[in-house]
Length: 222
Length: 222
Image 1 (tube, chains in turn brown, red):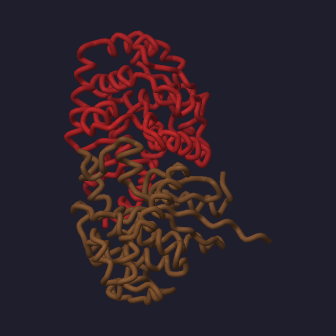
Image 2 (image 1 turned 180 degrees about the horizontal axis):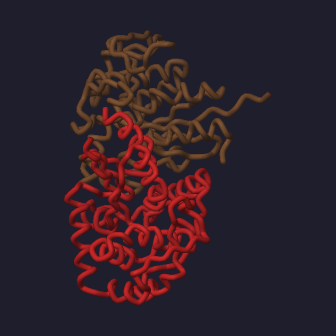
Image 3 (image 1 turned 180 degrees about the vertical axis):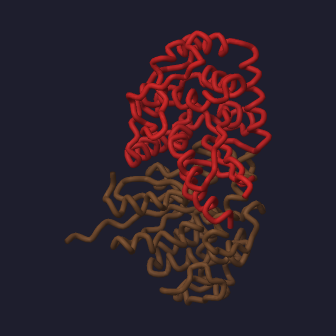
């Protein structure tokens, strides 16, 4: 039997719902014999430049609702959040560039790195707006197989990626270009929000759609 | 034991997801001994005027996705749609005014009337942009208890509301004011999207949130 195609998972590091989905998507896929390719995207490009909308949290009515919704989802799923969802967001570019760079140059470490960065930002509350902030790589955490993805006290070696190497990479023109390419590819795929999951060509937007993603995997569509 | 407070359900007649939620919300509430108060709201006011966003279907990337999402939801739940979700929307004011007017003057018939109007628009594909289009009241359908809400061939007496009476009401200043008041109340409650469900002060936006609404009712919050 041919192996089934991987799922595509698009996320922005500053998206709380993207973070939430990152904690579940691989397990959901694995139940159906699938793996997941993680792709960076940038809400600042899709939402503001392409769609012409303002940032979610700056939107009247919707902003306050979203903050509550984030907290409510976290409570329901037992996810600890190390930063208030309505605090000013970090600059997502260093994380996005780090991840895009790792995908190309250290593909085995790329997903653990993304998980470590998400964990640092969302659980530990570390602002990663500056490339230099990624130097403290050893203090970041990423889950090991079988560990709770949201645990605060797990440490994983991301070797051969070093903190210093990551800082240099994030400041390189190459990493910036890799992220630009990834964002262009996300837009070409029609992705506008975080998280977005594509299963066999079918797109699902939002963490609330994970139930439909599971059903789609189970039934092979409807 | 004191009866539990009713749920509040806010919807716009032109919202497909509002229509979908209208087919399930009373049954979900009933399972937990609750009733549902239906409230009209207007996306044209909340989304465009208050939030400063453009209409969903006119939004790049999100518009095409939403059309697909509507069709996918309808297929999953076996809901027949009599109009393409990406066709130009009707003017929602006559329906909104009719419903706001019925709430005040014929409260017993108000919800069946709303269901009949939703059914006429979404299942039969009848455009209700003009007050006169509501004259054909007898050809509208609303479900009777135990009937499938989405059935195309059910007819219900909305007496004492007559087609002619409805057309006159919809054109009255009183109905316009009742709808304005209802929309102002929806905004005061923080409602910005359709559907919105409020359970004991807790707000849920979107048909994808019905699972959380059920859980909230079951657990009494978390």
